[in-house]
Image (cartoon, rainbow, N blue to C red; front, top):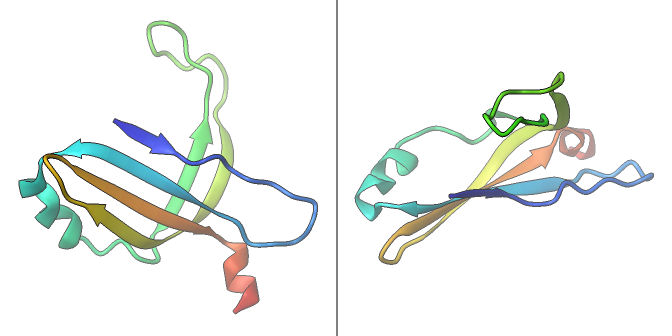
Length: 94
């Protein structure tokens, strides 16, 4: 299954990031993740309420927009891939 870290907000002008996690991956499929150029690509997270039938109730809201930064892979019986994304404000700091 997948998970997304809590999206932090604040009154100060500070770059914040989040982690996107996928678990239960067959370790043989890790080569796909390793062979894909992800760094610097756009990362958008939308929030949308769903019905029981998984139909969107209202217009989705963009809650995070940034760029993918690093990827961590934990191997075991199944693999876990975590991609960290940074806010577009990180460019401001540079």
